[in-house]
Image 1 (tube, one colour):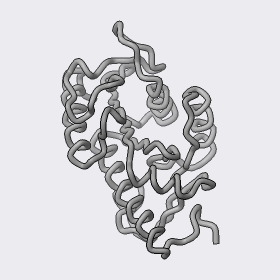
Image 2: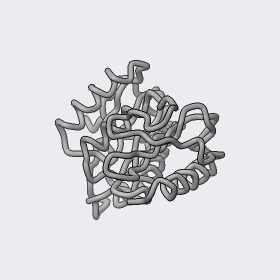
Image 3: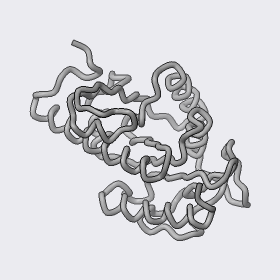
Length: 212
């Protein structure tokens, strides 16, 4: 587990890489990393994630309460609930994926996106073959973060843990047992979402949600 100073440097580096991939438009997204048993480093609101400075990252406790005099983003609660649900998780990355936004807006009724047959599935923890099927939960966007968090927690507690989830018209939350794993999951999700989006555009996609 990194120290706070090292964690801050690692989040700054992730922000630069996400920006280079087009995943950090304007001031969108937020990234977090465990830096102690009950301390989490997380980006503050209103800063461009591709140009992060140390002062753009703050520390919160496991319930999302600030450990300094700054106010955490409301979405901090969506990060901390993942750390509570999955004790092995060390990092959570939220980015405003163009593919996720476009695909979930184009498919307004789905509550999960089922993907299978992709070689890229092997980038996710526990998957060793392309002959796998993965459900990515999809939640309706809301400015009521506590209510959204309850819906997400209910879903994630009731099924096998996915590596990520989507918020309709908003973006992706991805996580992992290390910052490196969370970043790998983020890249793999974006790749698969782009493939699904292009398939929809070409009219060759399976029905969404895995229905026959």
